[in-house]
Picture 1: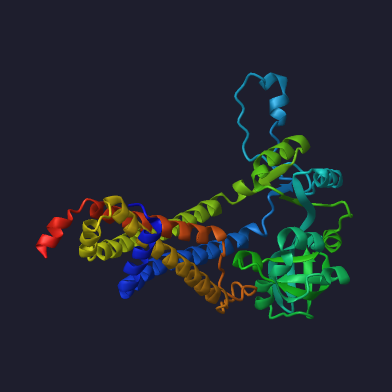
Picture 2 (picture 1 turned 180 degrees about the vertical axis):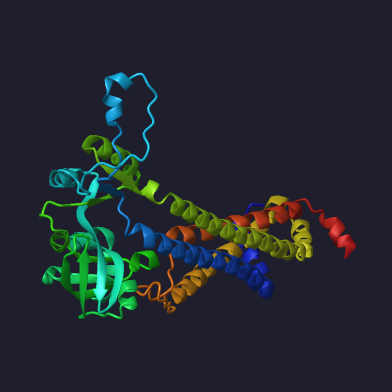
Length: 420
C-alpha cells in the first residue's frame, strides 16, 4: 500500500490505544539513557578532579641540574689502564651547585618557542621551619607567583589569605597547610626559617597553601623568588628549576629530550614523572566506560523485551491490517515507527533526567579537609554523553522493533483469525 500518512495515523492510534504500555516502554528507555548520562557525568567528573590535582600543578617539562658522578673517572684517562677493566668503588658526585647554568638565556629561548605556553623559574631551598621550640624540616620554593597563577592554577590552592601577598611584602610566605597545622599557625602569624648555611630569616604568613596531597602540604611552602635567593645567600641569577607548560602535552617527551641534549641539563617530561599516575587514570577511565556500556546493554535488552511483548500483544491488529489489504512491509514499518517514536520520546526524557540529576549532583555540597577548595561534587557536562545517549536510544529501539516487526511481516492472518 505504502500510504505513509495512513501508516503514521495507525501507528499513532496503536500507541495511544495502549497508552500505559507506551509509557512503560518509553520509561524503560528514559531510565536507561538517564542512568548512563548520570554515571558518565559523575564518574568522568570525579576522574577529572583526581587528574587535575596532579596535572594542574605538574609542569609538562621540569628542567634542573642533577648532581651525579662524572661519567669519565680519572682512572679512565690514565694511559696505563686504557686496556684494563677498571672498577671504582664509592664514586663521589661532582662538586657542583644545583643551579641551572645559563638559566636566563634558556628561559628567554623557551618563551620564544611557539610550542611553549609559558616557562617560569623556581629557586628551591631546603630549610627548617621554626616556631617557638618546634622545628620542622621542609622546602621553600621561590616562585614568580603571577606566572604560577597563569600556568598552573596556583591561586586555586590558597585556602586562606592571598597568593599575591608574597609580591606585596618581601618577607611574606605562603605556608603549606600541614606545616601550619603542626605548628598551630595562621595567616598574619610570624615564622622563622633556617637555611642550610645557618642563616635565620623571619617571615610573615600571607596565606595557607593546600594541594590536597599530604606529602606536599607537610613540607612545601612558597615565597617570592628573590626572597628564596636571599635565604640561600645567592644572587638574582640563581635558578634551580624551570617549569615549562606546553600548548600540547604530546610535545613534552621529544622537547624534553631535545632540551636535555642541547643544554646539558636534566629535563623530566610529565609522562615519565607521572607514569604510575597515568596508568591509574587510564584504569579508572576504563572502568567508567565499562560500567556505562554495561548499563546501555542492559537497558537495550530491557527495551527489546518491552517492545517485543508490545508487538506480540498486537497480533490481532496485525491480522486485521493484513486482511484488509496492508502488505507485510507496511505492517513492519508501522511497528518500527512505533519503536522509533518510543525511543525518541524516551531518549529525550532520558537526556532531561540525566541533565537534571547531574545538575543536582553538581550543586550538592562536598566538604573534605583534603580538598578545601572543592565545594561541590565534580560533574562533567560533556555534550558527547548526551549525543551517545540519544543515538543509542534510537538505534536500540529500532533494533528492538525491527526483529519483532520482521516476524510480524511474515504472519499469516488466516491462522491468527482461525485461532481466535
